[in-house]
Length: 286
Image (cartoon, rainbow, N blue to C red):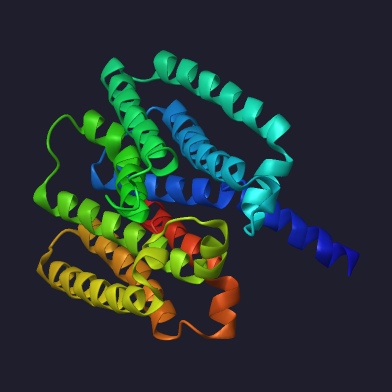
């Protein structure tokens, strides 16, 4: 029983710190280098992992400071309770990551990364400071999806040296939409907690019924597009990548079909983050 509690608590902290998201981003990145047939700088993997962790941790810190210890969301409570060491840690790792990027990556990648970071800062400003945000609504989940995917593909595309083929651009767009739908799905299950804390999400903005309808429609649209693409491709690596995206989208679709299932309610976040580990299959076997 003690062992079970310890394991459960350790896994909860693992999730609070978004280490599951970091792992998923590296798996998606592994597919990106296969798609573009490049051999990345080994330091890039660490720099990418740290970058993802910094962005997600900063987001959680902002959210935790808004509601302080009154937050209904356990992750935010964790960040607020441990803010005295987490905030300095995030700042220190940010500086370390900047040094690593400057030392090991091309100047073009570093500059592009800084520009993307500035966009992230603007995103934080909009959702945390702007009083008119509720009226000029841009889905937070969409912004996160775009930043997440572009951040992963940024260095590989620059190493590639030109605009990627149309098929790869299609995969990037589909991946953005899948990340977007996963974010909306999480907001669906976090609806009550977000309402209690006053957080704006896709579901708090449009309601649970409209959200699930939108998700199902988008899921079907992506599934049909991917099926057409996989039928038309004659490339093994593209076939494998599209098949992985089909599987990822399929799992999100299954969750939407039974949104009130008790098992789904309990494990929706694990399933949602878990699908982003599937792209590593392309890296390992193709």
